[in-house]
Image (cartoon, rainbow, N blue to C red; front, side, top):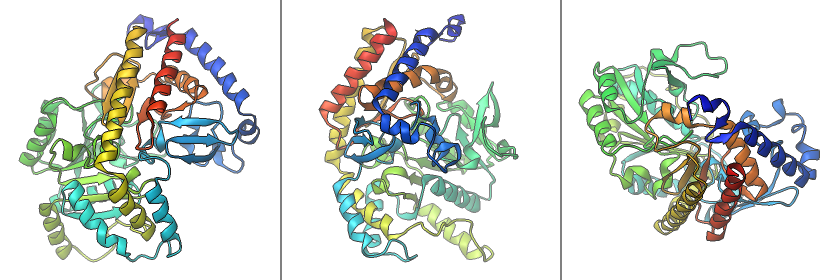
Length: 459
């Protein structure tokens, strides 16, 4: 992939063939959506860049799909076209669009008030539910995982008296400033493309490769790192699984260095009802989960261990009075409580996860079968109900390898071709999620569509 042939091919596919597929599939997309093209083909009026959020322009389709409705694992656009949805809001709707228990809870709460800076009865249930589900004794609620991660890093610095944090190259933790660093040619730098960033973020953030225990040991040796913030699996580019023993070493070395460990499960909650943490027995000091925790209503949670809570309470007793820098007025509102309780009690169940895992295994095997049939130099990676096909050989071991494996031109062509065959996957990479509402027929259609596109590329 990275030899001289990379000038004429991407992921083993000729650039000319990729461009031809993108052109023909783009034309088919436009022809099928006259209403969407008329209303959004030149951008949505009044919005900068023609979209309500800038990353909506990152979808590879010629113009955004205007959604009329979504239910379960299906989206219908304003042209009446139904799509099997495997993107599911890039995890925000991982349990399906408007799960019935969540929809009922939202309707019930809508008549009781949406925000009032006070807890509701649902909050009485949520604390114990979080303790039982994720194993940590003390919890707080925020609005996004970015917020929760920022708050945790403040607490970690407060109670350790240390300034630095450590992240893994290629990580994803929302828009937390300190995590916007990368290794380029082995050197820590600000992540390319940051808007308006004038600070050297590497002054307070160390960055090493995932799965590199020696680098981890060296980075912690000076005992100046307050917290390691980690996904159990790198997920936001090309998926990188943890090597056997890596998480054991991560926990051991952080404890030896007096460094706190934050596990961010916002994507890896696909692993099971208690996330990767419960399934594999991780023992974090902090735990963060955003996106799907309230079934699509914006919400996140962050938890802490007994020891951390005690140290934080001691810190609060001695610190000077004033604003902590942690808040947001709409956090911990009763709409979040209602939706989160319904999600935890009735949606994130063992039965639903068993079904999701079963269909994800089928999808993994089906996509792998297509790749093998056409002898493509690609592979499939999976963590629970989260599946990715990667247009490069694998498995990948770190963020640098994941960056090199990313094939934007090829992936964009595949994504549009899949949409034209009735299937929607995540726009930024090749991620697919199985929800409790996903059917076996939808999985089969995705495998068939992927096979049809692979056949065109490999012809």
